[in-house]
Amino acid sequence: MEVPMTEYDASPPETQARRFTVAADGTTHGDDGADGRLAASLRYACRVAGQLEFLTGAGDLEWVSTVSSTAVTARVGWSDAREVTLSAEVETGQARAPKEFTVVGGADVHAALGHCMQRVRQMLGTHWSAVITGDKRVVAAAVPQSGSAVLDAMAALPEVGVRALAVLGALEEPYRETCVLLDYTHGTMLVAAVGDHALYAFADKLDPQVVAEIVDEVRAVLAPGDVARADTIATGETRVDPLGTDPAAASAPVSAPASTALPAQQAGMRFRAAQPREPRTSRWGRRGG
Image (cartoon, rainbow, N blue to C red; front, side, top):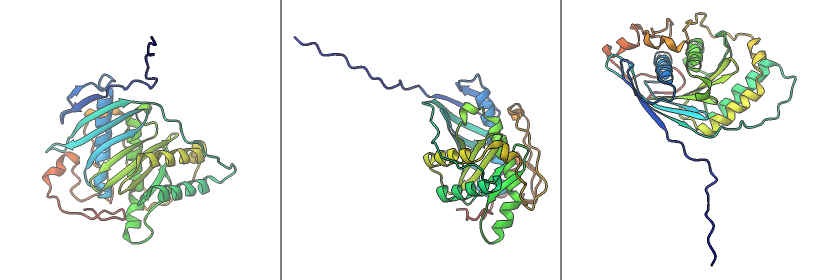
């Protein structure tokens, strides 16, 4: 009598997703897998990212997700006092091997930056994209080609970039190995680390798989040391808000940045709910719905 052999599944076991919520007062329920540190960091990152409504006209931040071996997905809400609420899930999967690219050496850093901006626009269909250094200098950008959106976008790039750096600084690398995607009412913003620097871009919608490939390509082309020495581009905005990136500041109010791109009633995010809300047109080359 032939005894059938027992078959074993060689695939890695599925891990149970961890779930947690953060209330408007910062109270956390559930398990973030990091003794509350991830919850606090994510709350801070969302408060910073939420300020971009003032700068881009993108609307409220609604979702945050990361492309990483430990991926975070969070539904973002706002209380009547404009405090962040979160309903998040953390899932650990297989590490993703970066796509390999053949890079020809000897290219000027500014040519390399320009090439990357072109590739980001071609592959992702972005309305704008930029690279900001760790010391808060915008060294590359691709913006709308005509109209008032050009000047508005260029002037706001430093302020937006500082917040991109803050989002990356708030989240530990295992949660954002490839990138962070910020979904707003009127589009999605990509934020990805390039060494100590950041690539950030805005589009109507982004495919995480295509995003991962273009981030790999940008990282292969740009040497962080060269980017740090690149010239600052003229953006028409000389002031950059020195926003801190310490997640410990999550318990402190995050004030609205000082910038000519802000509406007159810039009394801080938490007070915006008291202001009448009117339909707005995005200043980034697209019309809000």
